[in-house]
Every structure is written in structure tokens, then in C-alpha cells.
Image (tube, rainbow over all chains, first blue to last red; front, side):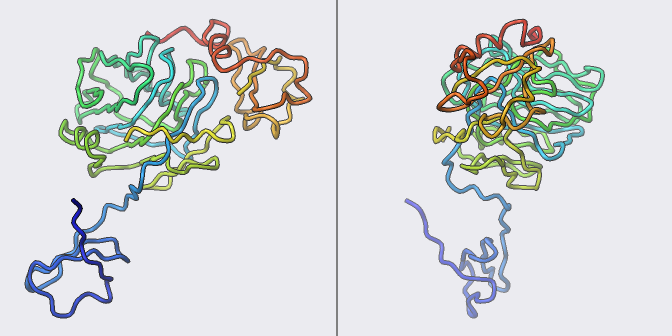
Length: 256
Length: 74
């Protein structure tokens, strides 16, 4: 049963509150609670979660998305995404046209890996296998020591070559790599998020169970555009451009 | 969605208002660069008339071959 919190605005806060009074400010989107002497404001995280009405369908032939700039990563980072493979055929899920040419790849068995980097110094192969025909939550994390962990539906799996020596990497393409010649993603994708920190197992579970994202987001693609050829970054301005997609690639099949 | 393979030399004749591809710069080419493909919904565009149409399953089978896809990354 939901609890309805009374609403107010910043300029019309109640003049004679009692300790414990709580409101939602419709203009600032913050929660405020009176502590007996002052209003305490609990600031919103700036993310418009809204309803999850859409995902995006990639045809596996040549659909991909170019980001307007690099999602540059140094040291610890995490990637969270929902994917629904239509097929397991060997394809790029995330890629880059930058000089380090980093990419996230699923081979013809569905085995997830992250490869590339300057001098091909990132060569991490997980024991995590995607399967066709269902939504799966995939998270890749790297700690400050450049050690990788892969999660599928909150379960972490063993990896080989888990430690990279390439701290600085940059993604700027979704669904393909720079040459579009290692296969392009075939299936649906939703809620792709990049973090500037290593997500903990509990934070991964929070995303999977409740769609609650931790702090540290540097780019977040909710795939809620629903029309047009843009993919909006809801925490920054690194929007994407749908490339080679048909007129209506937006799907109402979503993971939650 | 229908797909048609064309020679790279025919790219200049493609009307990108009638296919899903964004431009000549975003086409996917065979590894030797001699072929590419375009896709469209509905009626086959006039400039592609007579060429073999493939559906998504058929084109993916073709694209997975050595002519189009680099050796798999193990």
C-alpha cells in the first residue's frame, strides 16, 4: 500500500511545522522533513525514472548507436545493462572508435568478455553466458586495482585474465565496435548505465531487484525516448544517435 | 525488414531516403570491401529492383560467414 506524502513548494513551505512533518516539494523534487528547528532537504538524484515503457531492438545486421562523446573511464568503474538476446551468435554489445578500441563481446556460446584497450591489454573472459530469448541483467565492475567481476542476474562468475593494466578506456558505441565487423548486437537492450566506481554486490542486487541505481552514475541510457533517432543520457548530455535503425525500433517488451 | 546485398560500386545509386541506413558512411561492408547491404520495409525501392531480398534470419546467416565477419574472438 503506497504512502502518500503531502506536497508543497519551496516558497510555500508550512509556516508553523511540527517536528517530523514531511513533504514532497513539487518544484525542487526534494523531500523535506522538519527537525523541530529547521527544514532538512533530501535532494533528489536528478534521475527521471518514470515508467519503463520501451526498450530498443537491434537487428543484428548493422544497427548501432554512436554516442556524442566518449564515456571515459579511469580506474574503478561499472557498467549495468539489461539485454534480451534474440540469438547467441558472437557480437559486440558495447564498443569504441577511440584509439583503445575497448569492447564488450559475447561469443557464439554467449560467453561475456571485455577486450581491447591500448595494446590489447584488457583481455578478460568471464564464465558468464548469455542465453537467447529472455531478459538478463548484466553488470561488469572493475575495482581500483583494475580487477574485473561479471554479474548475470546478480550472480558473480569466475573470470580469466581478470586484471587489466589499462586504466584509461573509453566507450562511445552501443551494439558494434569501430569496424562493425565482429558482429553487431542482436536483441533488445534497456537501462544501460556507466558508473565511475565499482558497484558492490548489494548495489547490483538493488538495481536488479528494485531498479534503484547507486551514486556515481556518469551516463545513463533509459531507452525511454520511444521515437526518433536520439538516445537520451538522463544524467548528462552524452546522448546517442541511432544509426541504421528502421523507422520503429522501439519495443514495448521491457525487463520490468 | 528486407535486406539486399549490393556491390560497393553501387553505393552511389542508393537513395538513403528509401532505406534504413543513415548514409554511405554507416554502411557495413564485407571484409574485402567489395559488398555492402541496405534494408527497407515494404516495397522494394526502384533502384534495387531485381536484386535478391533476404529476411533478417537469412541476412544474419550470410553476415556470420567469413566473407563478412572477422574470425570470432574466443
